[in-house]
Image (tube, rainbow, N blue to C red; front, side):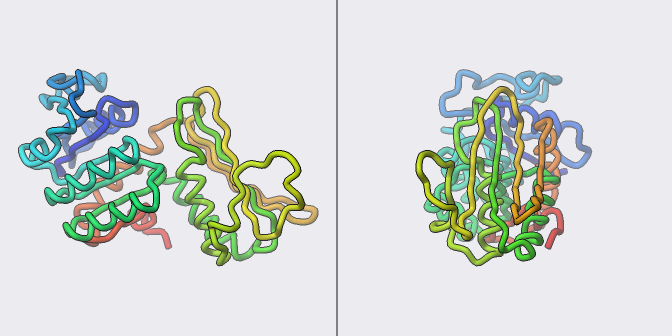
Length: 273
């Protein structure tokens, strides 16, 4: 039985993850963490998630180390915000707890800090901008297509609900990075984020990235390879957050036996090349 701690436990993703874990035969929720000094402290995590009582009380993140040690958690799942997740990863890894992180928006410095903590504490870690199984097949497809369509114009368009705070999405940025790497292009030089005014002629090397926000869109991502007389589009649409949660379940099962001290991706979880 894999013992799991969930941060952001009262949020939409956190509640969904808790609910899904209770449906698995090989894992259980042993800790539920929310923001520091949360007014939800002491509330039952199951009831908060809309399911039966679990007997697991929500605690504030100021007690994270104490909670992880008392619960015997083997894996911590984090879907929160970047600056909070960095601190959570630092504490969890120092406690010898493996981490599964779907939080997006990490800066290069924050990701370097995550890598350092995972390495120094020699734990398993899966950090992915998108846990959807389909999205990771989408990334894999882009990796194979980009070298074949190297002379096509490439544009990335993402759409999310009107409550999403970061833009472009982590998934769009991962798609951008996958394509740029395969084409040996510098991400600092070729990325164009939206266009306005007299921007001049499009260069062959640039990769456009565009963000749309509206309504309750869960997550749409389209990559357009546009050539002379034809266009190839690769698209992924998430209709429900369940697609991300299904990937989280696979990552939870994978991370206890993952290579220690390194950041694994969903490619590793899914066995994709």
